[in-house]
Length: 346
Ligand code: NAD
Ligand code: ZN
Ligand code: ZN
Image 1 (cartoon, protein in one colour):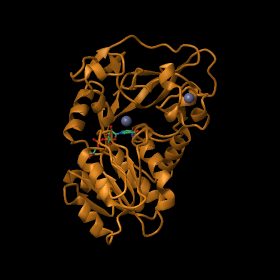
Image 2: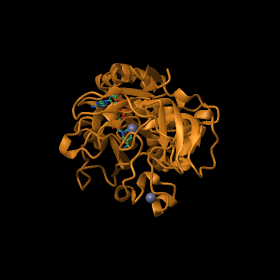
Image 3: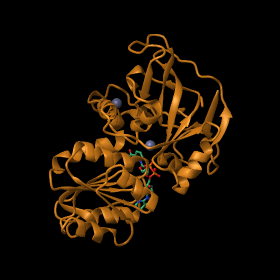
């Protein structure tokens, strides 16, 4: 089968032919319908050889949907031909975090060598994908595969962070979304669907700010040195009760800390590598900051339900598998509107 692989440190990913996978006991083989292109893959492909945690070559793609093509011995609960989304942050299934459904925070994944598809294990940018366990599949139940595939990460990750801030996002409150790309443009819609908060979006690109307004942001502000002041002014000096930074770079975490309200919460979701110093005099009183990773299986079910109810619609641009390297170039250049989605079978 054809697959998009990251093969050489520092080189672009390549479309290659690899052996067709076959499901072993307990595994499910999916015929991949669609796979999403996440900025995290670009970060992965920028890591130096000495700090690279996975084996090469690596088939990319940690957002996947497909139809069940074959079942390994002993698999129950899914049927051949069923359309499913893949829950990506696989865990051991038995530790206390997994027992809570939070496989994204599995306490034993590292020790057991369990990795998500596309982030260690062969990913969804291929004609077929092996899923390690049927519990990592959620039925699409009629959702369009292209529109649904980004929800498995670009939807689930912001949903998890926003859910934590829901008690703060009461009428009259403000939420700030920094970076309105794949994750950010879904975050704006989730905030509008789940809260009465005013949503202020920040980005460096006018096109992305236009998209932010289109998907429901009340205000869209250029993310520059004056952004924090602009947000303070828009909120009558109070700042934002919840800030979601989908960049995580030095200038954005600085802005995030500066626009937080007293007792506000800052989620650093982007993996730009910057930290927000929290301490007396550094941030407004009682600001808390955290860095989340992906979301729980139950939260993925909830995000898909929201999409089925029409509350979120992901903007997508589709590419064939042969054109997948181009999708990464476009994402790197900042010219993808919403999420790029690869269609391995055209
Ligand atoms: P994307 O490229 O689609 O979107 C990023 C957006 O940020 C773009 O619109 C870009 O114009 C904007 N941007 C860049 N610099 C900015 C600045 N200084 N101020 C404001 N906006 C700026 O990327 P994505 O796929 O949505 O991913 C966003 C980030 O989230 C990446 O760092 C990715 O690695 C990370 N991520 C984290 C998790 C997690 O679990 N923590 C999960 C998925 C993605
Ligand atoms: Zn991702
Ligand atoms: Zn576990």
